[in-house]
Amino acid sequence: MSEEELDASGDPWGRDDPPAVAEADLEPLPPVFAEIVEAFEVGDSISVPGGPDGPRPGVDDLPEVAALVAAGWHPLPAGMAGEELALLPAVWPSEHRTWVPDRLPRFGLVSYGGDDFFVEPARESAEHEHWQLARTARSLGLPVPPRGRLWLLRSPWPDLRVGSLVLLLRQVRDEDELGWEPSGMMEAARRVLSGTEEQAWSRWTRREGDAARAWRGRNAPGAEVDRWIALGLGPEVVDRLTAPLNEGGAGLSADEAHTWCGVTCTGFATGTDVVRRTIAWRRIGLPADAPVGRLMSVLLERQPEEVQPWIESGFTAEEIAVWEAADLPRAARWREAGFGVREARELVDADPTVTPGEARAFDAAGIEPSRRARWVAAGFAAAEAREWTDLDVVSSEARVWRSLGKGPGDARAQQAAGARGHLPLGFASGWAAFGPDRDDMGFGVTDPPGTRGSLANEQPLVEWGVPGVVPPDFGDLGTEEGIAP
Image (cartoon, rainbow, N blue to C red; front, side, top):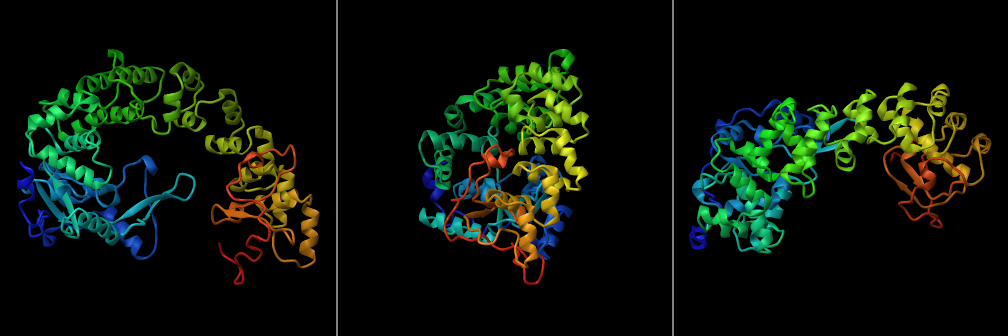
Protein backbone atom coordinates (compact mmCIF):
# COMPACT_ATOMS: atom_id res chain seq x y z
CA MET A 1 0.00 0.00 0.00
CA SER A 2 1.56 3.29 -1.11
CA GLU A 3 1.67 6.56 0.84
CA GLU A 4 -0.52 8.07 -1.87
CA GLU A 5 -3.16 5.40 -1.30
CA LEU A 6 -3.01 5.97 2.45
CA ASP A 7 -3.56 9.71 1.92
CA ALA A 8 -6.11 9.43 -0.88
CA SER A 9 -9.07 10.05 1.39
CA GLY A 10 -9.73 13.56 2.63
CA ASP A 11 -10.96 11.93 5.84
CA PRO A 12 -8.13 9.75 7.13
CA TRP A 13 -10.05 9.08 10.34
CA GLY A 14 -13.11 7.50 8.71
CA ARG A 15 -15.39 9.95 10.44
CA ASP A 16 -18.46 8.47 8.78
CA ASP A 17 -17.50 4.85 9.41
CA PRO A 18 -20.06 3.17 11.69
CA PRO A 19 -18.91 1.60 14.96
CA ALA A 20 -18.36 -2.12 15.19
CA VAL A 21 -21.08 -2.16 17.85
CA ALA A 22 -23.77 0.53 17.87
CA GLU A 23 -24.27 2.40 21.10
CA ALA A 24 -27.83 1.11 21.36
CA ASP A 25 -26.54 -2.47 21.25
CA LEU A 26 -23.93 -2.12 23.98
CA GLU A 27 -24.27 -4.36 27.00
CA PRO A 28 -24.32 -2.77 30.48
CA LEU A 29 -20.96 -1.81 31.90
CA PRO A 30 -19.28 -4.69 33.74
CA PRO A 31 -19.66 -4.47 37.54
CA VAL A 32 -16.02 -3.42 38.03
CA PHE A 33 -16.59 -0.31 35.89
CA ALA A 34 -20.11 0.36 37.15
CA GLU A 35 -18.79 0.45 40.73
CA ILE A 36 -16.01 2.83 39.74
CA VAL A 37 -18.41 5.17 37.96
CA GLU A 38 -20.83 5.13 40.91
CA ALA A 39 -18.03 5.89 43.39
CA PHE A 40 -16.71 8.77 41.30
CA GLU A 41 -20.18 10.31 40.99
CA VAL A 42 -20.44 10.70 44.78
CA GLY A 43 -16.81 11.77 45.27
CA ASP A 44 -15.46 8.48 46.62
CA SER A 45 -12.43 6.44 45.74
CA ILE A 46 -12.77 2.68 45.58
CA SER A 47 -10.34 0.01 46.72
CA VAL A 48 -8.97 -2.52 44.25
CA PRO A 49 -7.46 -5.94 44.91
CA GLY A 50 -3.99 -6.93 43.91
CA GLY A 51 -2.13 -3.69 44.56
CA PRO A 52 0.14 -2.12 41.95
CA ASP A 53 1.22 -5.47 40.51
CA GLY A 54 -2.25 -6.97 40.30
CA PRO A 55 -4.54 -6.96 37.27
CA ARG A 56 -6.24 -3.63 36.67
CA PRO A 57 -9.48 -3.27 34.74
CA GLY A 58 -8.90 -1.88 31.27
CA VAL A 59 -10.25 -1.61 27.77
CA ASP A 60 -10.20 -5.40 27.27
CA ASP A 61 -12.79 -5.75 30.05
CA LEU A 62 -15.47 -4.00 28.03
CA PRO A 63 -17.67 -6.77 26.61
CA GLU A 64 -17.81 -5.26 23.11
CA VAL A 65 -14.02 -5.03 23.01
CA ALA A 66 -13.58 -8.57 24.35
CA ALA A 67 -15.80 -9.89 21.55
CA LEU A 68 -13.77 -8.05 18.91
CA VAL A 69 -10.48 -9.28 20.41
CA ALA A 70 -11.81 -12.83 20.12
CA ALA A 71 -12.46 -12.11 16.45
CA GLY A 72 -8.86 -11.05 15.84
CA TRP A 73 -8.89 -7.33 16.56
CA HIS A 74 -6.34 -5.51 18.72
CA PRO A 75 -7.48 -2.57 20.91
CA LEU A 76 -5.28 0.49 21.20
CA PRO A 77 -4.70 1.66 24.78
CA ALA A 78 -7.05 4.39 25.94
CA GLY A 79 -6.07 7.77 27.31
CA MET A 80 -2.52 8.92 27.98
CA ALA A 81 -1.28 5.33 28.01
CA GLY A 82 -2.13 5.15 24.31
CA GLU A 83 -0.64 8.50 23.30
CA GLU A 84 2.26 6.88 21.42
CA LEU A 85 -0.16 4.99 19.14
CA ALA A 86 -2.95 7.55 18.96
CA LEU A 87 -2.26 8.59 15.34
CA LEU A 88 -2.04 5.09 13.90
CA PRO A 89 -5.73 4.86 12.89
CA ALA A 90 -5.20 7.80 10.50
CA VAL A 91 -2.70 5.82 8.40
CA TRP A 92 -4.00 2.29 8.94
CA PRO A 93 -5.82 0.55 6.09
CA SER A 94 -9.51 1.36 6.58
CA GLU A 95 -10.59 -2.26 6.16
CA HIS A 96 -8.32 -3.22 9.04
CA ARG A 97 -9.49 -0.69 11.58
CA THR A 98 -12.71 -0.23 13.50
CA TRP A 99 -13.98 1.48 16.62
CA VAL A 100 -16.51 1.31 19.44
CA PRO A 101 -17.93 4.14 21.58
CA ASP A 102 -15.56 5.16 24.35
CA ARG A 103 -17.28 4.49 27.66
CA LEU A 104 -14.17 3.54 29.62
CA PRO A 105 -13.87 5.29 33.01
CA ARG A 106 -10.57 7.15 33.36
CA PHE A 107 -8.85 6.39 36.65
CA GLY A 108 -5.49 6.14 38.31
CA LEU A 109 -4.13 3.84 41.01
CA VAL A 110 -3.02 5.45 44.27
CA SER A 111 -1.89 4.24 47.67
CA TYR A 112 -2.79 5.75 51.01
CA GLY A 113 -0.13 3.78 52.84
CA GLY A 114 0.32 0.12 53.68
CA ASP A 115 -1.06 -2.36 51.20
CA ASP A 116 -4.27 -0.46 50.41
CA PHE A 117 -4.63 0.69 46.82
CA PHE A 118 -7.49 2.66 45.39
CA VAL A 119 -8.63 4.02 42.06
CA GLU A 120 -9.42 7.70 41.74
CA PRO A 121 -10.37 9.79 38.69
CA ALA A 122 -7.43 10.28 36.36
CA ARG A 123 -5.84 13.70 36.44
CA GLU A 124 -6.25 14.01 32.68
CA SER A 125 -9.88 14.07 31.56
CA ALA A 126 -11.16 12.64 28.28
CA GLU A 127 -11.60 16.25 27.12
CA HIS A 128 -7.94 17.00 27.81
CA GLU A 129 -6.88 13.83 26.00
CA HIS A 130 -8.86 14.86 22.92
CA TRP A 131 -7.56 18.43 23.07
CA GLN A 132 -3.96 17.23 23.16
CA LEU A 133 -4.45 14.75 20.32
CA ALA A 134 -6.30 17.36 18.24
CA ARG A 135 -3.40 19.79 18.64
CA THR A 136 -0.91 17.12 17.59
CA ALA A 137 -3.01 16.15 14.55
CA ARG A 138 -3.37 19.76 13.43
CA SER A 139 0.36 20.36 13.78
CA LEU A 140 0.89 17.53 11.28
CA GLY A 141 -1.72 18.75 8.81
CA LEU A 142 -4.22 16.07 9.78
CA PRO A 143 -7.89 16.76 10.43
CA VAL A 144 -8.97 16.74 14.05
CA PRO A 145 -9.82 13.15 15.03
CA PRO A 146 -13.40 12.26 15.92
CA ARG A 147 -14.18 12.22 19.63
CA GLY A 148 -15.35 9.38 21.81
CA ARG A 149 -13.78 6.42 20.01
CA LEU A 150 -11.89 3.39 21.22
CA TRP A 151 -9.91 2.16 18.24
CA LEU A 152 -9.14 -1.43 17.30
CA LEU A 153 -6.74 -2.49 14.57
CA ARG A 154 -6.16 -5.66 12.63
CA SER A 155 -2.98 -6.65 10.83
CA PRO A 156 -3.08 -6.70 7.02
CA TRP A 157 -0.69 -9.67 7.09
CA PRO A 158 -1.43 -13.15 8.48
CA ASP A 159 1.92 -13.76 10.22
CA LEU A 160 2.39 -10.32 11.76
CA ARG A 161 -0.15 -9.54 14.45
CA VAL A 162 -0.76 -5.98 15.55
CA GLY A 163 1.07 -6.50 18.84
CA SER A 164 4.14 -7.63 16.90
CA LEU A 165 3.72 -4.89 14.33
CA VAL A 166 3.87 -2.27 17.07
CA LEU A 167 7.21 -3.70 18.22
CA LEU A 168 8.49 -3.51 14.64
CA LEU A 169 7.21 0.05 14.25
CA ARG A 170 9.13 1.11 17.33
CA GLN A 171 12.32 -0.34 15.88
CA VAL A 172 11.76 1.43 12.56
CA ARG A 173 10.98 4.67 14.38
CA ASP A 174 14.23 4.47 16.34
CA GLU A 175 16.46 3.30 13.50
CA ASP A 176 15.09 5.92 11.10
CA GLU A 177 15.30 8.59 13.85
CA LEU A 178 11.68 9.63 13.46
CA GLY A 179 11.40 11.03 16.98
CA TRP A 180 9.54 10.04 20.11
CA GLU A 181 6.38 11.99 19.43
CA PRO A 182 3.24 10.14 18.21
CA SER A 183 4.14 11.41 14.74
CA GLY A 184 7.21 9.15 14.84
CA MET A 185 5.09 6.01 15.19
CA MET A 186 2.68 7.29 12.53
CA GLU A 187 5.51 7.82 10.04
CA ALA A 188 6.98 4.41 10.87
CA ALA A 189 3.57 2.87 10.15
CA ARG A 190 3.44 4.67 6.79
CA ARG A 191 6.80 3.24 5.81
CA VAL A 192 6.10 -0.31 6.93
CA LEU A 193 2.53 -0.52 5.61
CA SER A 194 3.56 0.82 2.21
CA GLY A 195 5.65 -2.30 1.63
CA THR A 196 5.01 -6.03 1.56
CA GLU A 197 4.88 -8.46 4.45
CA GLU A 198 8.26 -9.91 3.54
CA GLN A 199 9.78 -6.45 3.42
CA ALA A 200 8.41 -5.86 6.89
CA TRP A 201 9.97 -9.08 8.16
CA SER A 202 13.30 -8.15 6.60
CA ARG A 203 13.35 -4.89 8.57
CA TRP A 204 12.76 -6.61 11.90
CA THR A 205 16.06 -7.51 13.54
CA ARG A 206 17.52 -7.86 17.04
CA ARG A 207 16.13 -10.13 19.76
CA GLU A 208 12.49 -9.31 19.13
CA GLY A 209 12.80 -10.01 15.41
CA ASP A 210 14.63 -13.28 16.03
CA ALA A 211 11.95 -14.35 18.53
CA ALA A 212 9.17 -13.40 16.12
CA ARG A 213 10.69 -15.51 13.35
CA ALA A 214 11.04 -18.44 15.78
CA TRP A 215 7.30 -18.19 16.53
CA ARG A 216 6.29 -17.63 12.89
CA GLY A 217 3.96 -20.31 11.61
CA ARG A 218 3.28 -21.74 15.05
CA ASN A 219 -0.38 -22.35 15.73
CA ALA A 220 -0.51 -20.34 18.97
CA PRO A 221 -2.86 -17.55 20.11
CA GLY A 222 -1.67 -14.14 18.97
CA ALA A 223 -1.69 -12.42 22.34
CA GLU A 224 0.15 -15.38 23.87
CA VAL A 225 2.89 -15.14 21.25
CA ASP A 226 3.19 -11.35 21.27
CA ARG A 227 4.05 -11.20 24.95
CA TRP A 228 6.98 -13.58 24.44
CA ILE A 229 8.20 -11.70 21.38
CA ALA A 230 8.18 -8.48 23.42
CA LEU A 231 10.65 -10.18 25.80
CA GLY A 232 12.74 -11.48 22.91
CA LEU A 233 12.09 -15.14 23.80
CA GLY A 234 11.34 -17.94 21.39
CA PRO A 235 9.25 -21.09 21.86
CA GLU A 236 12.19 -23.22 23.00
CA VAL A 237 12.61 -20.98 26.05
CA VAL A 238 8.92 -21.23 26.92
CA ASP A 239 9.01 -25.00 26.50
CA ARG A 240 11.93 -25.26 28.91
CA LEU A 241 10.41 -22.94 31.51
CA THR A 242 7.11 -24.82 31.50
CA ALA A 243 8.70 -28.26 31.68
CA PRO A 244 8.58 -30.00 35.12
CA LEU A 245 11.44 -29.40 37.53
CA ASN A 246 12.28 -33.09 37.60
CA GLU A 247 12.68 -32.99 33.83
CA GLY A 248 15.13 -30.09 33.80
CA GLY A 249 12.57 -27.33 33.47
CA ALA A 250 11.37 -24.57 35.77
CA GLY A 251 7.96 -26.11 36.51
CA LEU A 252 6.03 -22.93 35.71
CA SER A 253 2.75 -22.33 33.96
CA ALA A 254 2.91 -20.09 30.89
CA ASP A 255 1.54 -17.13 32.88
CA GLU A 256 3.97 -17.75 35.75
CA ALA A 257 6.87 -18.07 33.32
CA HIS A 258 5.99 -14.76 31.71
CA THR A 259 5.87 -13.06 35.10
CA TRP A 260 9.28 -14.47 36.03
CA CYS A 261 10.79 -13.48 32.68
CA GLY A 262 9.54 -9.94 33.15
CA VAL A 263 12.22 -9.75 35.86
CA THR A 264 14.91 -12.19 34.74
CA CYS A 265 14.97 -10.80 31.18
CA THR A 266 16.24 -7.41 32.32
CA GLY A 267 19.48 -6.16 30.87
CA PHE A 268 21.03 -8.14 28.05
CA ALA A 269 20.18 -11.64 29.30
CA THR A 270 19.89 -14.21 26.55
CA GLY A 271 17.19 -16.86 26.46
CA THR A 272 19.75 -19.36 27.78
CA ASP A 273 20.57 -17.04 30.70
CA VAL A 274 16.88 -16.58 31.51
CA VAL A 275 16.27 -20.33 31.60
CA ARG A 276 19.37 -21.05 33.67
CA ARG A 277 18.68 -18.33 36.24
CA THR A 278 15.00 -19.13 36.58
CA ILE A 279 15.62 -22.83 37.07
CA ALA A 280 18.32 -22.10 39.64
CA TRP A 281 15.92 -19.97 41.70
CA ARG A 282 13.16 -22.54 41.48
CA ARG A 283 15.47 -25.34 42.61
CA ILE A 284 16.31 -23.63 45.90
CA GLY A 285 12.60 -23.58 46.75
CA LEU A 286 11.16 -20.28 45.51
CA PRO A 287 7.56 -21.11 44.66
CA ALA A 288 6.17 -20.76 41.16
CA ASP A 289 3.82 -18.01 42.31
CA ALA A 290 6.50 -16.08 44.20
CA PRO A 291 6.06 -12.27 44.12
CA VAL A 292 8.89 -11.83 41.62
CA GLY A 293 8.10 -8.15 41.11
CA ARG A 294 8.82 -7.50 44.77
CA LEU A 295 11.77 -9.89 44.64
CA MET A 296 13.38 -8.05 41.72
CA SER A 297 16.36 -6.67 43.65
CA VAL A 298 16.97 -10.09 45.17
CA LEU A 299 16.76 -11.94 41.87
CA LEU A 300 19.03 -9.48 40.09
CA GLU A 301 21.58 -8.67 42.79
CA ARG A 302 21.98 -11.95 44.68
CA GLN A 303 22.79 -15.53 43.88
CA PRO A 304 20.47 -18.45 44.70
CA GLU A 305 22.96 -19.90 47.19
CA GLU A 306 22.82 -16.63 49.16
CA VAL A 307 19.05 -16.83 49.47
CA GLN A 308 18.70 -20.56 50.10
CA PRO A 309 19.45 -20.23 53.88
CA TRP A 310 16.46 -17.90 54.16
CA ILE A 311 14.16 -20.52 52.69
CA GLU A 312 15.68 -23.23 54.87
CA SER A 313 15.03 -20.96 57.90
CA GLY A 314 11.34 -20.87 57.05
CA PHE A 315 11.07 -17.40 55.56
CA THR A 316 8.47 -17.04 52.83
CA ALA A 317 9.19 -15.45 49.47
CA GLU A 318 7.21 -12.38 50.54
CA GLU A 319 9.25 -12.04 53.74
CA ILE A 320 12.48 -12.43 51.80
CA ALA A 321 11.31 -9.68 49.47
CA VAL A 322 10.58 -7.33 52.38
CA TRP A 323 14.02 -7.91 53.91
CA GLU A 324 15.66 -7.96 50.45
CA ALA A 325 17.55 -11.07 51.64
CA ALA A 326 19.85 -8.87 53.75
CA ASP A 327 21.15 -9.93 57.20
CA LEU A 328 19.39 -13.20 57.97
CA PRO A 329 20.41 -13.22 61.69
CA ARG A 330 18.75 -9.83 62.24
CA ALA A 331 15.58 -10.89 60.42
CA ALA A 332 15.46 -14.04 62.55
CA ARG A 333 15.84 -12.01 65.78
CA TRP A 334 12.91 -9.78 64.91
CA ARG A 335 10.79 -12.77 63.96
CA GLU A 336 11.63 -14.55 67.21
CA ALA A 337 10.61 -11.39 69.10
CA GLY A 338 7.16 -11.67 67.56
CA PHE A 339 7.31 -8.78 65.08
CA GLY A 340 5.66 -8.99 61.69
CA VAL A 341 8.06 -8.69 58.81
CA ARG A 342 6.71 -5.35 57.59
CA GLU A 343 6.70 -3.66 60.99
CA ALA A 344 10.18 -5.02 61.70
CA ARG A 345 11.54 -3.68 58.42
CA GLU A 346 9.88 -0.32 59.04
CA LEU A 347 11.58 -0.07 62.42
CA VAL A 348 14.96 -1.10 61.07
CA ASP A 349 14.66 1.46 58.29
CA ALA A 350 13.81 4.07 60.93
CA ASP A 351 16.95 3.17 62.90
CA PRO A 352 19.26 0.31 61.83
CA THR A 353 20.54 0.03 65.41
CA VAL A 354 17.15 -0.33 67.13
CA THR A 355 16.60 -3.60 68.97
CA PRO A 356 13.37 -5.58 69.36
CA GLY A 357 13.46 -4.82 73.10
CA GLU A 358 13.59 -1.07 72.47
CA ALA A 359 10.71 -1.36 70.03
CA ARG A 360 8.60 -3.33 72.54
CA ALA A 361 9.17 -0.56 75.07
CA PHE A 362 7.02 1.68 72.89
CA ASP A 363 4.19 -0.83 73.16
CA ALA A 364 4.57 -0.89 76.93
CA ALA A 365 4.48 2.93 76.94
CA GLY A 366 1.19 2.90 75.06
CA ILE A 367 2.53 4.42 71.84
CA GLU A 368 0.47 3.36 68.83
CA PRO A 369 2.34 1.08 66.41
CA SER A 370 1.55 3.52 63.60
CA ARG A 371 3.50 6.21 65.50
CA ARG A 372 6.27 4.02 66.85
CA ALA A 373 8.53 4.07 63.79
CA ARG A 374 8.23 7.87 63.57
CA TRP A 375 9.56 8.27 67.11
CA VAL A 376 12.34 5.78 66.41
CA ALA A 377 13.33 7.61 63.21
CA ALA A 378 13.39 10.89 65.14
CA GLY A 379 15.74 9.41 67.73
CA PHE A 380 13.46 9.33 70.79
CA ALA A 381 13.25 6.53 73.34
CA ALA A 382 9.88 5.15 74.42
CA ALA A 383 9.73 7.08 77.71
CA GLU A 384 10.47 10.36 75.94
CA ALA A 385 7.84 9.61 73.31
CA ARG A 386 5.29 9.03 76.06
CA GLU A 387 6.03 12.39 77.71
CA TRP A 388 5.72 14.27 74.44
CA THR A 389 2.57 12.39 73.44
CA ASP A 390 0.91 13.36 76.72
CA LEU A 391 1.52 16.99 75.71
CA ASP A 392 0.00 16.39 72.24
CA VAL A 393 3.38 16.97 70.59
CA VAL A 394 4.26 14.64 67.74
CA SER A 395 7.75 13.44 66.89
CA SER A 396 8.48 16.02 64.17
CA GLU A 397 7.57 18.79 66.63
CA ALA A 398 9.53 17.20 69.47
CA ARG A 399 12.62 17.37 67.26
CA VAL A 400 12.17 21.14 67.10
CA TRP A 401 12.04 21.46 70.90
CA ARG A 402 15.08 19.22 71.26
CA SER A 403 17.07 21.17 68.66
CA LEU A 404 16.60 24.29 70.82
CA GLY A 405 17.79 22.50 73.94
CA LYS A 406 14.27 22.28 75.35
CA GLY A 407 12.31 19.34 76.70
CA PRO A 408 8.80 18.31 77.78
CA GLY A 409 9.03 20.55 80.87
CA ASP A 410 9.46 23.61 78.68
CA ALA A 411 6.51 22.60 76.50
CA ARG A 412 4.41 21.98 79.60
CA ALA A 413 5.23 25.43 80.95
CA GLN A 414 4.40 27.07 77.63
CA GLN A 415 1.03 25.34 77.53
CA ALA A 416 0.32 26.24 81.16
CA ALA A 417 0.89 29.91 80.27
CA GLY A 418 -1.90 29.61 77.70
CA ALA A 419 0.34 29.77 74.62
CA ARG A 420 -1.24 28.32 71.52
CA GLY A 421 0.54 25.79 69.30
CA HIS A 422 2.72 22.72 69.47
CA LEU A 423 6.03 24.42 68.62
CA PRO A 424 8.22 26.70 70.76
CA LEU A 425 7.15 30.33 70.71
CA GLY A 426 9.16 32.39 68.25
CA PHE A 427 10.42 29.39 66.30
CA ALA A 428 10.92 30.24 62.62
CA SER A 429 12.30 27.94 59.96
CA GLY A 430 11.90 26.62 56.52
CA TRP A 431 9.54 23.66 56.40
CA ALA A 432 7.96 21.16 54.07
CA ALA A 433 4.81 19.06 54.30
CA PHE A 434 5.10 15.51 53.00
CA GLY A 435 1.55 14.43 53.87
CA PRO A 436 -1.65 15.50 55.64
CA ASP A 437 -0.53 14.55 59.17
CA ARG A 438 1.22 16.92 61.57
CA ASP A 439 3.96 14.31 61.78
CA ASP A 440 4.41 14.67 58.03
CA MET A 441 5.91 18.12 58.56
CA GLY A 442 9.65 18.51 58.11
CA PHE A 443 11.39 21.42 59.85
CA GLY A 444 14.80 22.97 59.32
CA VAL A 445 16.41 21.80 62.53
CA THR A 446 19.70 20.16 63.44
CA ASP A 447 19.66 17.14 65.70
CA PRO A 448 22.15 17.00 68.61
CA PRO A 449 25.39 15.10 67.93
CA GLY A 450 24.97 11.36 68.36
CA THR A 451 21.20 11.37 67.77
CA ARG A 452 20.01 8.00 66.59
CA GLY A 453 17.44 7.48 63.86
CA SER A 454 17.30 7.96 60.13
CA LEU A 455 16.11 11.57 60.30
CA ALA A 456 19.33 12.75 61.94
CA ASN A 457 21.29 11.80 58.81
CA GLU A 458 18.63 12.59 56.25
CA GLN A 459 19.42 15.13 53.55
CA PRO A 460 16.85 17.95 53.84
CA LEU A 461 14.46 18.33 50.93
CA VAL A 462 13.76 22.03 51.64
CA GLU A 463 15.93 25.06 52.24
CA TRP A 464 16.14 25.10 56.01
CA GLY A 465 16.46 28.11 58.24
CA VAL A 466 14.83 30.70 55.96
CA PRO A 467 14.63 33.87 58.09
CA GLY A 468 11.11 34.97 58.82
CA VAL A 469 9.45 31.85 57.42
CA VAL A 470 7.06 30.62 60.08
CA PRO A 471 5.54 27.13 59.76
CA PRO A 472 1.77 26.80 59.90
CA ASP A 473 0.23 26.63 63.34
CA PHE A 474 -1.70 23.40 63.87
CA GLY A 475 -2.45 24.22 67.50
CA ASP A 476 -6.24 23.90 67.14
CA LEU A 477 -6.24 21.23 64.49
CA GLY A 478 -9.65 19.58 64.46
CA THR A 479 -11.55 22.53 65.95
CA GLU A 480 -13.60 25.04 64.06
CA GLU A 481 -10.78 27.57 64.31
CA GLY A 482 -8.06 25.10 63.38
CA ILE A 483 -6.14 25.05 60.16
CA ALA A 484 -6.73 21.87 58.22
CA PRO A 485 -3.74 20.74 56.17
